[in-house]
Length: 522
Image (cartoon, rainbow, N blue to C red; front, side, top):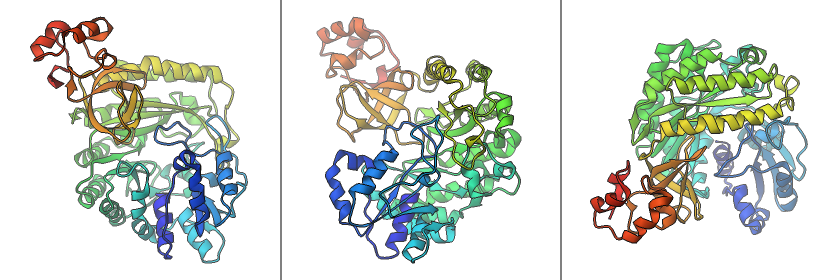
């Protein structure tokens, strides 16, 4: 949302904002010349959650400073999460430091700080929805300048702040910096969606809040969901964007679900009525060690998370368009205060419990804490104490948990709609639009931006192998044919020797039956 509100603040002052990503600048450094011609340069930088991303690589501090020093013409301002601090990766403290090459840091809310700066005041700003909501509409046209447009996921903010902050919040989290929750109105969210939709946006994620189920809820550390407000919000988004292709959520507090089961079920049903399938409710579990939960004031104990996983499976496990409606995702944060070698044993036991119970989770994210100044974890943590066990845990999950979960969620024969190719190679990679889309490897050279339906034929540790639908048996090269169930390396030569096949029966005489037979074309 920062990009759109900053663009809106500029447009409201008769600037004509242009947008470029750091990946575009890396690919074509000569575009720096365009930056030098600008009247004003605003860079949004930094992350609060470390990770690796297929869609883009956040700029490290050295690169940010290179941009600042390389551009000499305009005034240069920088804002975003970089204001909280910078760390090169998880497992390091995010240290506040001067970013050289820029004239000013937009402290706090970037768009408000920018507007204040342009009025001749200090470049500081506190979130004020009465100011940023109109800018989110005015700046919505900037979405068309994104290099992935129209396949860009538009993040929608519904709230800022965290009710758990009443007791200090989770030890590592920056959300309590914003205070108790402030909710955007449904009218404001719908107005932004309508503006984005008018400019061609079709993919949306209701992702900028710590707990979507708490939207509009009352006071208290763990307020009960108000399903009618969730229903009204998602219904309004659907009305504002009648042609949307993706509507997903993100963060969901498992404690809210476990503590308020009936209300949470109704709220989940409201989301499922209006969203698009393949959705993920991201649970900030962080650890399965009760001692670490207590030491870091985390949100939920392991049994509560387990119950929440079960409830989301019950409500969201039904398939539509071949994939589950809504599944939980689990986040683990390692290096927190109180962590011991036993913590990792408990994490593994918990995940095995989920697996053996027949429950599904869409993905398990594991990272090391990246504590920011001002959080309890900045001074109280176990960084660097269990590096070997951390690596073992990641490897265990990749080999023992991720693979069987992928097989459960995406069985052979699952058709994935609208996979967009992002990396063109002999093994091309693409993803569906979504909050946490599965990485799809297709053993064919497909041009970037190609959009195709694809059928799952095998699994990796964190990806699936798939073939374009329909599967053209008489045209596929051996490198792709060998992935078909029933063919493999042993029969691929025989299949090629017998081509062209006239019909399915002729093919089955060589390869036998398989779950993808209905998708074959001759």
